[in-house]
Each structure stands twice: as C-alpha cells, then as structure tokens.
Amino acid sequence: MDLTDKTALVTGANSGLGKAVSRALAARGARVLLGARDPERGEAAVAELRAATGNDQLELLTADLKSQAQVRKLASEVSEKAPALDFLVNNAGTAFPKRCLTEDGIECTLAVNHLAPFLLTNLLLDQLKAAAPSRIVNVGTRINYSMELGDLNWEGRSFRMMRAYVESKLGMLHFTRQLAKRIDGTGVTVNCVFPGVFKSNLGGTDGAQGLFWKAVSLLVGWALAQPEQAAERVMYLLESPEVTEVSGEYFGDCRIISMPAQVRDPAANARVWEISERLANLDEA
Image 1 (cartoon, rainbow, N blue to C red):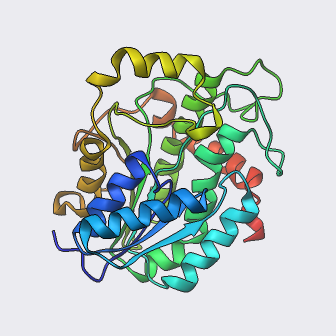
Image 2 (cartoon, rainbow, N blue to C red):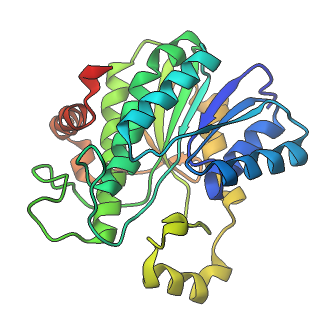
C-alpha cells in the first residue's frame, strides 16, 4: 500500500521491531517520526533506514519514556511537527531485573511499558482525530495473567522481573479496550497486537535481560523469527482495509485472538484506566 502523505510515530524505533516497522512504513512512502531514547543509536537507525528505503522523510525524536516530563515533551514535539497524525505505534518496551523507581516514583517497567504509551496516546488524541481515519497500534505479548490492581507499583509484594513485564503488557490490553470505548465514533481506532516471538534486545544495553535472556538467546536464538517478520503483524493493523473499522481487539498473526479473562471485564478495564490516569498525572495535560 502506498502511504505517501501519511505520518507515523513509532516508539522504540532504533532497533528490533520498532526499526522494522519504521522501515516498512518508510518503504511505503510514509513520513516517519522515530522515537528513541539514545540519540546516537537513533541517528544511526535513521541513517540506515534512509539509505535502505530512499525515503528522506524520517526524523528522530528522543525521549526517555521512564520520565513523564519527557513523554510530555515528546508529545509536544510531535504535535508541532505533525498537527495531523495518521499512525501511532506504541512499541517501546523493556524489563528490569530489580525493582527501580523513576523520578516520578513509578516502578520502571510499569512506567515504560504501560504508563508512557497511556500518557503519550492521550496527549496525541487531537492530532490523531485531525487525521481521521487514523490508527493506534499497541504492541503487547501473549499472556494469560491478571494484574494485581491493588499494587501495580510493586510496593507490597516481592518484585519479579517477568511478572512485572507481563503485567505491564497486560495493562496495554486493558488500555486498548477502554480507549476504544472512549474514542468510538471519532474515526480513530486502537488495537493491540502480539507480534510473535522474535529476536529482540529486551532490556536494551542496560543489562536488564539478565542471564536468563542471554541463555535463551544462545540456546534457541537461531529458531526465532526476525523482527521483519514480526513487523508484518503490525503493518497489517496499520494498512489493511479489513480492519478499517475494527477497534479494541487483540490480534496475532493477522487475526483476532482471545484476551485474558481480566481484560474481558469492563469494570477491570475502567479501574486500570482510573489508576493509570492518576499515576500518569493525566489531569495535568
């Protein structure tokens, strides 16, 4: 599909799935704003994608998504550069081996994987509505857990890296469901996608993958899909006419898949939204 005259924002765009999605968008002619934390790695990704696609409409925007101030700064920059935003891909994600807190007092996994996209998306809704029909894609993972709604910040329980990771990603499903209800009729759709198991650098260069992830990479990395294959699932939700009016669903391999029981509970979705709204200080927008 020709995406000339379309503008997209992709977070976590300097490597892995985010870079693969950015490349696919650029190859189709879209203007792509690449969100990344590290300026050097981000600029390297922009240069690589420009050379690979011949598309000069690629621009780096840097922000550390652990910081709500930087998320707000990112949203402001996007608003200035793209008064109408056609696509938002909330892809950035990470994991931390030990509980750590952000400058806002939020557990870091929750801050990056859930609250940052929650806040960023809400701050960019006017731009998305201005480009309607427009699409939001939240990148999730295949999970069958429930969130501990009374302790999202891990203050009263022993921290576990993978549990924190999957709970934060489950938050994205709750967010997807509740946001779909709130923006119904605006011409903006939102869906969540499980991109499959693929080679990634979860945790980045900070050592957050730990020995477990390094061992997995050494033992079965050869069998994992490449990010480009995973990007096909994201691109399906961005450009397929089949999902033009589909919103609030969970996709895997270009089809709707089942959600965990907690996410099918409207009351739980509303509660996660209320908690997220408070933790992200959304009323300051």
